[in-house]
Amino acid sequence: MSSKAILLDSNLNTNNYYATLVNGQKYALIPHLELEIGQSLNDCPIAYQTWGSLNKEGDNALVVCHALTGSSDVSDWWSPLIGPGKALDPRYYFIFCGNVLGSPYGSASPVTTNPATGRCYGTDFPSTTIRDDILAHKLVLDSLGVRQIAAVIGGSMGGMATLEWPLCTPHGYVQNIIPIATAADHSAWGISWAETQRQCIYADPKFKDGHYEPRPESQPSAGLAAARMIAMLTYRSCTSFDSRFGRKPQKYSNSSASDQLDLIGPNLSKPSVDHREHIATKAKKDKIAFSAQGYLHYQGGEVHQKIRRQLLLASIKQNGFS
Image 1 (cartoon, rainbow, N blue to C red):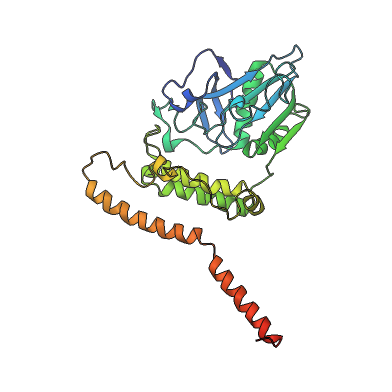
Image 2: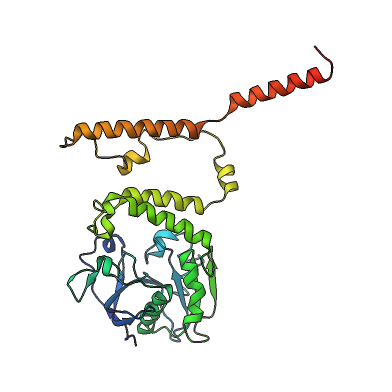
C-alpha cells in the first residue's frame, strides 16, 4: 500500500537541471508508492504548483493535467486560461497541477536520484502509467487538505488523465471533468505515429541506448527535433495545412533549423580533429538535401501548361478548326 505524501519546504531535485527550469515549484515526498505494474518507488518526489486558496470545506479544487511534454507550471503553457477573470480563476478556486512520473521537470523520473544507489535511475526507472500519476497526485492533494475536486481539466495526455480521475478515486470525489483533444485509448494508428517518433530518438547516436548525461548538450537533440516535426503533423490535418500554407513559398531565416539545432554536425568555424572528414560528409549531405528540396519545391507548373495546351489543341481539331 502506498504511504501518505509528505509536503516539503525545499527542493529535492537540486541536481536535476530540468527541474530548475520550472519556477515556483513545490515538492512532496511519497515514502512508498505502489505502481500499477507491481513494482514500487521509494522516497518518490512529486513536483507540483498551486494557485489560489483552499476553502474551509476543501471542495473548491481544480486539478489541471499537463500534456506529455509539459510541466506543473500551468501559467507557462496555458497562460490565457489562468488568472483573475479567466477560466481558471485563483480568486475562487484552489488550482493544482502535479508533474507526472517520468517527466524530467521534477517528479520521479530517469533523471532523479534512485535512493537505493545514490545515482540517477536512468534506464532502471520502472514503467509508470497515467493511473500511477493520479494515485501520486491524489496523495499530495490529501496532504494539502483537498476533500473534493470541483473539476479536472486537461488536454492530450492530460485529457487521458482527466478521463481516468473519476475512475481512480472514490465516487463523488471528482464532480466534473473537462477532457480536451484526447481519447479513452490510443488507436493502432496513434501508436504507430508515436513509435515512429521514438525510433527517431533511438536513431540519434547521442541516445546511446538511453545512457546519456541528463544535460542539454548531451541529449539526442537531433532525434528529438525530428520526432517533434513528426508530432506536429499529427496535431494538424491535411486541410489545415492547405489553408495555412498551401503550396505558397514560405519565408525562411538565414539559418536553417538544421544549423540552429546542429543537426548536420559541428560548427565548421571551430577547429576539430576530423575537420576534413566533416567537410566531405557535410558536402554529401548538403547535396542530398538540395536534391530533396528540389523535389519538395517542385510545382509542376510547366507540365500543367503543356497538358492544357495539348487539350486545347485536341479540342480545336475535334471541332474542325485548323
